[in-house]
Amino acid sequence: MGFYLRQRTIQSAISLLGLIVLVFFLARLTGNPADLFLPADTPQAIRDEYAARHGFDQPVIVQFGAYLMDLLRLDFGESLRDGTPALDYVLAAFPTTLLLSFWAMTISLTIAIVTGSVAAWHPGGVFDRIASLISLTGASIPNFWIAIVGVLVFSVWMRVLPTSGTGTPWHWILPVAVLFIRPCGVLVQVVRSSMLAAFASPYVKTARARGVRERAVIFVHALRNAMLPIITVAGDQAAGMINGAVIAETIFGFPGIGKLLIDAIMFRDFAVIQAAVMITAIAIFILNIGIDLLYSMLDPRVRHG
Amino acid sequence: MSDMTQTAPLRPESAVAESFMMLWRDKFAFVSALFLLLVTAAALFGPALLPDGAMTMNLRGRNAPPFEWERGWVYLLGADNLGRAVLARLVIASRYTLMIAVSAVLISLVAGTVLGLLAGYCRGRVETVIVRGADILMSFPSLLLALIVLFVLSPSVSNVVIVLAISRLAVYLRTCRAEVMEIRERQFVTAARALGASHARMIFIHILPNVIPTLMTLATLEFSAVMLSESSLSFLGLGVQAPAVTWGLMVAEGRGYLASAWWLSFWPGVAISLTAISANLLANWVRTATDPAQRWRLEWRAK
Image 1: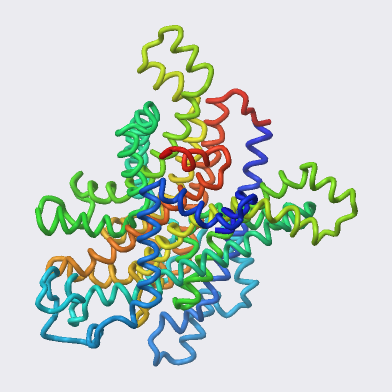
Image 2: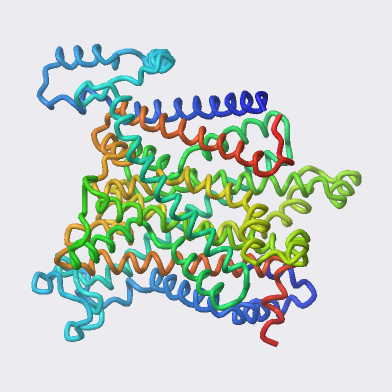
């Protein structure tokens, strides 16, 4: 296991380095920040001073080297807007997104496991057909549109839910709803197909022959064995939550990573963009390693090492 | 449907008819195919069929509500803040929406297949470099990657296509490589190699035809994913820019008028959803139809 973890960490570090290079050079391609942040009539001397203070006068490769050295000291640079360390911004926004994703993921996994299992129990039956159509619809509807229709129905017409902010639990309902629908639709389909495979297997037949209650057959015998593909897809969906979070947080004014990133992009705030991307990537790597470990816990045949 | 003709080699003249019968068996897929045909037709010929004046500003028809017949059929879905008919705008936008999604899917399909063939066939250092690159692409959510790249390149139709193509490329690459690695160990490939077949012959005659059905299924599935990504980007303001228009951009434009004119954001979202649902239903059908173990469901059920 130790060998596996080390191997996996090295792989992740290589990917992360690739990402750092990509984001750094892409961000630098957008033009000279001195021109962007200073008023158009700024004298050249002040421009030069500004560039020198932020290191923009150096060759790009030197800037990159300095940036890497800073990163090793966990220094992500400072926001160009107000000089606050970029990491502070990101760490302040991170818990909101994490909590949002956690609720969305928990709800969609719960719904998907129950619905998918029941659908697979009688494949081709009425419930299965309805569940298939609804889940496919859920996986196909754009989440920004769900958000807008949600605002229209619950905020504009019924006036029961707030449209932005994080103050009360009521504020969380629409964003969580926007985030959970698409992963839930995808997961129902995965749960259904892997439960179908599990129901066809010999151990389920044996359990039924032994007279195990049907509910126990579904949720203990079949589900445990169907869990592996479900976890893989759930992991992908959890990593993809950030995509949905960008949309949901922008629409509902939620102070999370997604909104931070969009704002930083609009302001061309390099340090914040880089820090947000990096922290998200690290979170996703940790998630993936966790999923691999969960895998080997659920299925002793999958041993890493 | 080149994959269909391959599975029915005995009666090639009836392959089209057979595909149609299989489509007819699955009513959801049939309706989806009809709807996608309708959308394609609207994108190709629709703009020419629109009555004069549907796209010009018309201040008296500002924010006209939907379902009022007296203004004419193009105003059936209402009009926007400049008095342009929503239905007419939907037709114009379908052109960009479909064109972007189809070209992005085609580019990533071709590029991903070529790289996947290279990686699976050549092995060694070439493979390592390609697979590592794909890992980096896959290790990060595609929408975020696209956001950052589009912020650097100015958002334009061609840049959106390129970004979407690159962000989805790794999916084809991985699938293609896995298939190639499996197929190249099969006996007919080993036999061809023993007979002294050239690399080009091995790849194009023996390996590629066996990989194509899987990749085609994947491409139909990817179509709706790419279309949804494009709408998200356009909605966030980093995709297609006015005067070009896509459904996602229309939703964004209508957002400011949500309280007074809900139909501006509502209808384009319906268009995106219905198209994506149809594409997914059709992709499910393609998957069943091209899978020899599943095909009987479509061939025998109604007989």
